Image 1 (tube, rainbow, N blue to C red):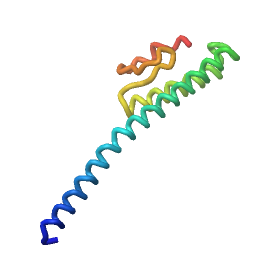
Image 2: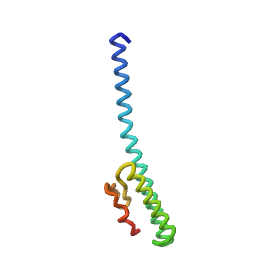
Image 3: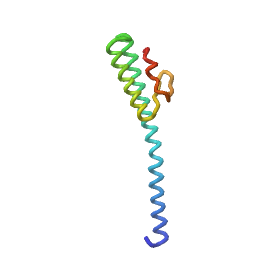
Image 4: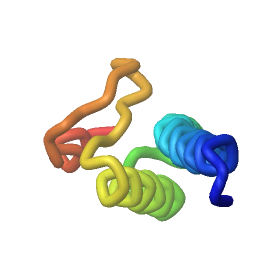
Length: 102
């Protein structure tokens, strides 16, 4: 690699590898955030179903509510945000316990 061409090739290859890794990280973060959103949406649907079938204070609704809060905590731990499907938006405050009326 004493030649000028060899050094340029090595530098170019190294730069390409760095850029490839750098561009993959944001894509993974977006994918992970979308997965978080889907999990919360499903948990909210299960809660609504449990409330409509068994009542707001039923053991089934309580279990679904606990699962929903667990999904929200998981998202909060990864993204410092959680998704509200009814409002279709991300919250940046850890205030999901104010939504326990459902």
